[in-house]
Length: 90
Image 1 (cartoon, rainbow, N blue to C red):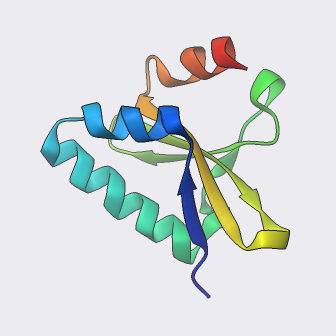
Image 2 (image 1 turned 30 degrees about the vertical axis):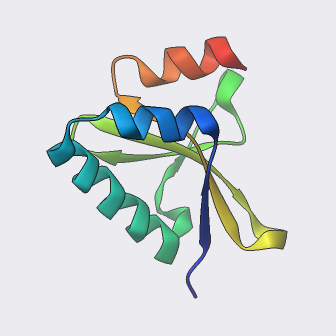
């Protein structure tokens, strides 16, 4: 079963800002998540309820909405900054 992928506006902006080669890798990883959404690791503390999937040095942070069979990409970015940015936004 393939899950529907949705993006928050900030995740869409982050995706557009990525280098084209990195963007392709991130989009390929998101397509993998559409097939197997529970592959990402559950996050803790202030980001509890979200999951993270690694692709190279970049992270995709998302949540799963089981009742709607969809994945919502909350944010994405380089590993050194993505979690801190999301924590500030929430």
